[in-house]
Image 1 (tube, one colour):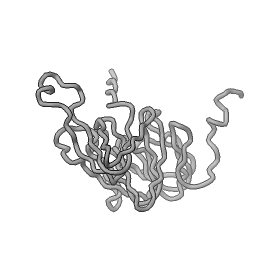
Image 2 (image 1 turned 90 degrees about the horizontal axis):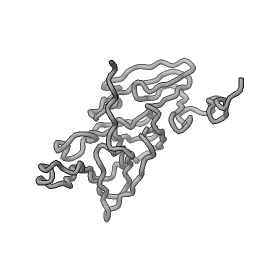
Image 3 (image 1 turned 45 degrees about the horizontal axis):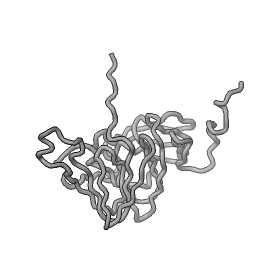
Image 4 (image 1 turned 135 degrees about the vertical axis):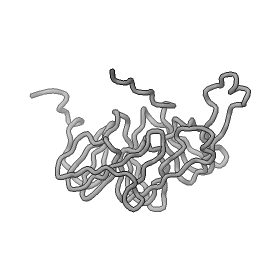
Length: 225
């Protein structure tokens, strides 16, 4: 049988080392040798002796359910084998976190991560002002995390001289040393006249970077008839 479908770029290669790697721009391959963690429902294929267990509050405080817009419901994958993960054909990126580093990520953008990483849920100062993107997971320790993003992400440097303001629905994550808060850029009078649609942003100050997606929000899915 012949087809461009069978080109090398589409072929799943044999495992050469444990851990995660990009299968392609839209999926991540993880060679499991013991345990790893992933977003519930994100496994698209596997081979080998693997078991998938839903996790709520987690093991020793490492696995928690985030109170974000879409949440961060996780599963543990255990055993020996290979698994592939993806989410709605979104772009995938792998970030390696070194000891002493920390990365704040919106729960909707987490795909999978090494068990050597731990995380805690934090809320942005002033979160009562508005909703969306205000509860985030802070990953620390050492290991790799795979992120998903609608479209090509934009990484914006933040300096003490130039804070960055980001739409709360567009933020993917930021370096943990930044100081986040909510900023109101619209006057009360403007809001009463209908507003600009840009009333409140996430303000990030300090030294680091912020990752944003080229979309303010995910369109609601049509309900089945």
